[in-house]
Image (tube, rainbow, N blue to C red):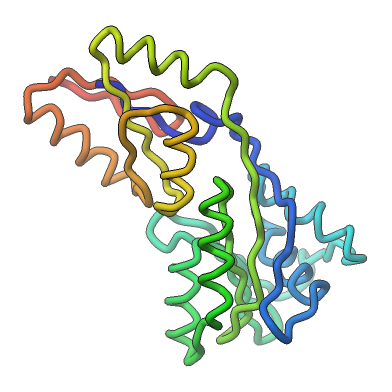
Length: 222
């Protein structure tokens, strides 16, 4: 069995922000600025692409070095990141993580949010929700591309008796779409590093020889 990380292994790994989708009553520029501020400390290609996209809405890049900004780094546990600035808590991350954050602050997710999260996921994109304190402002649409020839490679592995499982932190809808288009046998969505290791141990306990590839690689022993 071959376990594969999605981003950079099955896909090109250069997910880029392509669209800001505001919730009702929220302006695109307001969403763009909040998304940009929450991404200033994010040095990933995705984070930088959000800052670049925000400039198309006339949002200048803020310099927070001399302010009292408190950056909140991304973690696999919280699945979100952001910044606390001038009494505002700005966050961006997985839809369910942002929904929980807003609820904790006394707010509620608008019904339009689920519609957009589902749409982006079914299209194979990655949605990032953006919130300010107790309000969800909107969604950032991240796009990625499957590498050429992946389906044919997985067909060859299948013919050799090797099954393939894609492992990703993306939500189930996005993971299912990428899995279908790439041709892997199965997938694990919303995976944490602990979940990856648990899957490896489970497969090994079933007597299977397991290999893993990608930047989330763990060295398993049988």
